[in-house]
Image (cartoon, rainbow, N blue to C red; front, side, top):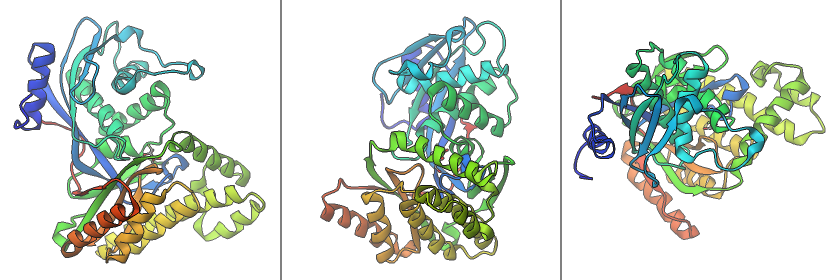
Amino acid sequence: MNDSVSGPDRAVEGFRKVFGAEPEGVWAAPGRVNLIGEHTDYNDGFVMPLALPHTCLAAARARTDGVLRLHSGDAPGGVVELRVDDLAPVADDAGGDRGGWAAYPAGVVWALRDAGVLSGDGAGGADLHYTSTVPTGAGLSSSAALEVVTATALNELYGLGLEPMRIAQLCQRAENVFVGVPCGIMDQTASACCAEGHALFLDTREMALRQVPFDLAAEGLRLLVVDTQVKHELGDGAYANRRASCEAGARALGVNALRDVAYEHLDEALGTLAGDEILVKRVRHVVTENHRVEEVIERLDAGATRSIGPVLTDGHASCRDDFEISCAELDLVVETANAAGALGARMTGGGFGGSAIVLVEEADAESVGKAVTEAFAAAGYRAPRIFPAVPSAGARRLA
Ligand code: GAF
C-alpha cells in the first residue's frame, strides 16, 4: 500500500485491493481520552470524555447475500468471512477465543439484528475494510472506535436512521454480550457523539449529554496524552472485579447505584460500611469522582480552565489510592509532569497501564514532555509516546 495517500483514499485503496470492487463510502469514528469521571459510567454517574483526532476508518459496501466480510489493514490474518444469520454470542463458560478483532464488528451486526433494527434473512451483509490510527492497547478506545464506525457505516448503508446515542448503546451491547467485556457506555458515546472543540459531559443515568466548549489552543493551553506503552495483565479481571465491588457497595448502602450516594453524606455512608475497607475505598472513589466531574464542569463554565488542573490530579490520587487501578508508570507520569510545571495530570481510561493526560501551558508542553521521557528512561521503562489531545469530532462520513 502507498503510505503517502491520505486516510479516506487509503481506506478506498485498501478496500479495492482486498475486495476487488468500489466501496459505497468511507466512515470514521475516533478514539477518546477521558478528562475526568473514571469508572463512574457503570455506576450511573458522570463522565467527560473528548474525542481524539485519531480515527478508525471503514470503507464499506452492502451485500445482499447475508455474508459479512471483514478485513483490517492493521491486523494479520486476511479476510474474516461470516454469515450474518449464524452470528451468536459465545456462551460465558465456552472459554477460548471469541474471534479476535473481528468479534467487535461482528458483534455490532449481531446487536443491530438482535434489536430488530436490521431485520430479515441476511440483513447486515457487507464488505468492510478497516484502517485505524487509534493506538491499540493504550486505553484510548480503539475497540469502541471499531464498533462505532461499523454501526455508523451500516446505519447509512441500510438506511436505519439511528441517532448517535442509539448507535453507542447498541455498540455497548455488542461489547458486553457478544465480545464479553463488561464495559460501561462512556467510550462508545464519546466515539459516536463528541464534537470538535468540545468535551462531552454525559450523565450516564439519564443518557443526557452536553457539549462543553474546550478550546485549549485559544487559551494557550495544551492537553498532552502520554501513552505509557504498558498494559499490565492484572487489568483483565480487575475491571469486572471493580464493577462487582461497586455493585456490592450499592447493595450494602441500599441504593440502586453509587450515583445515589450524595457527596454531602459520604462520611455517613462510609460509616455504614465500616469494617469493609475495600468497599469503603471503592465507594469513596466513585462518589468523589462524580463530584470532581461536577467541579470541572463548573470551572469550565466559569471560564477558569487552568483551575481544573488540581482537580485532575486529585482524580489521579483517588484512582491510585482508593480505586487501585493505577500503576508505577502512570504514577511516574503524573508526579514528573506536575513537578515539571504541569497544571495537573491523571491516568485516563480503565487503568493498569495505558495512557495519562497532562494539562500544560502551551509554552511548557515541550519541557514537561521531555521531563516525563527522561524520567521513563531513568526508571528503565520503555519510552512513552506523547502527543496532544485536540478535541475532535465524533463519528461521521468522510467520502
Ligand atoms: C473503560 C470502559 F470501557 C469504560 O466504560 C469506562 O468504565 C472506563 O474504562 C473507566 O472509566 O474504558
